[in-house]
Every structure is written in C-alpha cells, then in structure tokens.
Amino acid sequence: MLQFESINVHYGKNRVLRDVTLSVGGGEIVALVGANAAGKTTTLRTALGLKAPSSGKVRFDGEDITRASTPERVRRRLVLVPEGRQVFVKFTVGENLLMGGYRRSDRDAMQADFDRVYALFPRLAERRHQLAGSLSGGEQQMLAIARGLMAKPRCLLLDEPSLGLAPILVEEIAATVRQLAAEGMTLLLAEQNAVMALSCANRAYVLESGRISLEGKAADLQQSETVRRLYLGH
Image (cartoon, rainbow, N blue to C red; front, side):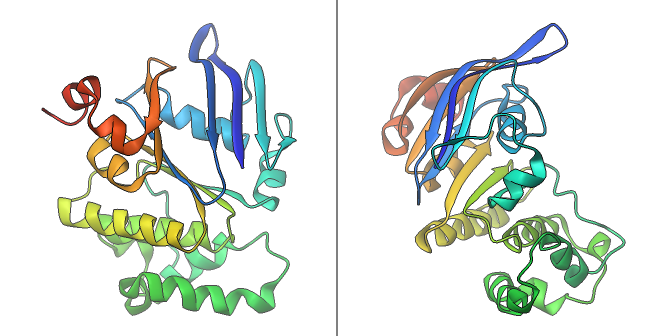
C-alpha cells in the first residue's frame, strides 16, 4: 500500500534519510525502530508530504504521490498521528475528534465513527465534554489516535505513540494497534520502544543514522543479537 523507493531527504546540507526503501502491505503492521534522531519522524513526515524528498519516490496504492500535497494524501486516507500528541488543548475531546474529520464529505456518516472511537477508548467517551488539555498523557495519546481515526484512514502512520507513557498504558496502546490491524487497517509504527513495536508488528525495519540497517519479520528481529543488544536491553 505504501512504498518508499530510494528516498533521500535533506535539511539544508544535512542528509537525514539515506536511500530509504521500505514497503507496507495492506493490512500489515510494519514497525520502524530506531533511536532518537535516527530519522523516524522524517520518514513519516515524508510519507505525508510534510517534507519533500531530495530524490526517490513515494507510492501509495501503486500511484506515485511524491509531489502530491499533504491535503491530497489525507484525501486518499493516508493519516498521521504525530509525535507528542499535539491535541488541541483548549478544545473538548469531542471537538478534537470533530477536527479529525474536517476534510470528510460524508458528515452524515461521522456519528458512526464517533461511536466507534468511543467504543475503542471508553475513557474518551466519559470525558467527551472535557478540555483536552486537562487529560492525562495517556488519555491525550488515546485522543490523538482517535482523532486520526476520524479521518477514516486506510493507512495510519503512528509516530512514537508510547513516548512518555507508563508501561501499563504502553500495553493499552499496543493492544489498540493490534485491534486496528485485526479490523483490517494498515499501520506504519515508528518507535524507539522496540519491545512494544516488535510485539505488535508483522515486519520491521531498523533505522540507524538515516539508513535501513536491518529488516525482516518482527519475530526474527526480536531474536537478532544486534537488535537485542541495542534496543531490547539484553
């Protein structure tokens, strides 16, 4: 569904992605694992058109979208849940969700998606009239994911959803990721937390200094000596 073909990205003279080639098949969870500043966020921003590559191609559903605008990619239902949640803190939970669907033309069908995300995240249903800025970090992360789901993504890009969360909340987010995949959604999960990411994913890529250094089935990478030493703590 989503493909990078030899993508290079520069910030000024600094090359931050180096010949990155990866693919995400329909219905897969693919993990992009790497340390801070490895290039994970830049990869997702490039996928969504927020950063233009210096060379290479991005394809979605087989079509070249390298020069497509971000609104056009969202219209195709490629959706990013950004690092740091970035909820609208002075809006209520319900208003944040409404913003997630602002480009949708099927407004009559949105109530069903409100019901869906409230069923997925019951705590958001309880707090639907509460300001997003008053939520806990875990609740804000749930809201960020739920807001992304209101755009009816075919491919959801998740940038560090476990960042700063307690272990019990990390497992809740992981369970949500697995449930979305079980329902047929395609996900690209960028994470420093390799334990969480590899426990969810079908396949994974390891990104080091802007390059893909390892790739394969997530279960195989969990057994890789390099991955275990660098990312799994043993």
